[in-house]
Image (tube, rainbow, N blue to C red; front, side, top):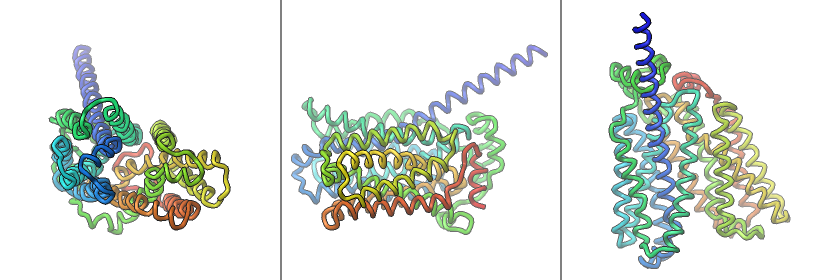
Length: 445
């Protein structure tokens, strides 16, 4: 009897160790995907001067190239989410990293503005698809007690990828003779490593269950997921999802919340961060690289603190009060026309910190409040709506600063933050510690 018990214990330990190794691998490749997203968007900045000179780009062409990735995200997010719900997470998970690798490699051979726009559009589609499948996969494989932290870590990876790309691009551009083609193409090496790392990863058991492939779902859940996941999995409905389900009587609140919350979070941030130099100069501050990097560094600190607290303090406390704080801070900046420059700088840093805190939740909530059959398309739709907000902020900010002035512009940004705070006060759920089935069912009803 003791020998039998010892054998069972060893098997249990091996199984637990195997699951831990798998989870480490899955988390690493998912976080790596977000790192690559940030890297691709950040690497173009340091080489934009050489690129514009070599390709003889005027302001219009530079704007189109910058907008191409954003347009790709608008396309890739909803389409990738729809495909992930219809065909499964695994094939789309591999497709988008393959598209990353191909489009990244094409950057070595770009010789015209049109080709560069096409390449950046393809990379944007890959980024949008990664948003729509990466966060749902992380939600579906993560233990409930760590789910918020792991999903939030993907936001840290994005910031880290963006900042590291800027640093690498600057160093390679300034201190080597490498072409801007090669510097842009460095993302190819990351993409290829991630593609190889994703080979052999399994399909999501929750997706398999949702389409009625229950035996496969049970087998994969037993092999890869925490021991309590199978019980929760068996409470999932077997139902075919559709885009229209997002706006049904059952799910319209979750769709409204995740989309509008994400929109209100990123619109003022992208506007202010993108034009940090000119915004700070309007208030008599020496913006430049130091100002922009300072805002980004403070934002990264806000994300890290949120990730550390999310599974302990909960979601609502990290979502709602920071939004009220940002609305107040932006209103003070807008109304206090004669504020001393150091005070204005402190207020902008406070905004950047608290905005980053609740922006971390924009990637967490969609995976938790939506059921498996529409988790992909819902996440993709919300991501697309958020990019519309980012585009509006980037497009309107310089015109508003020039025609209306800094004060009214900041008041408009405050109004957007206020709308997000009111919406979240009404609709933001508390999902800490809940299984995915509990979180989605509780919110829907």
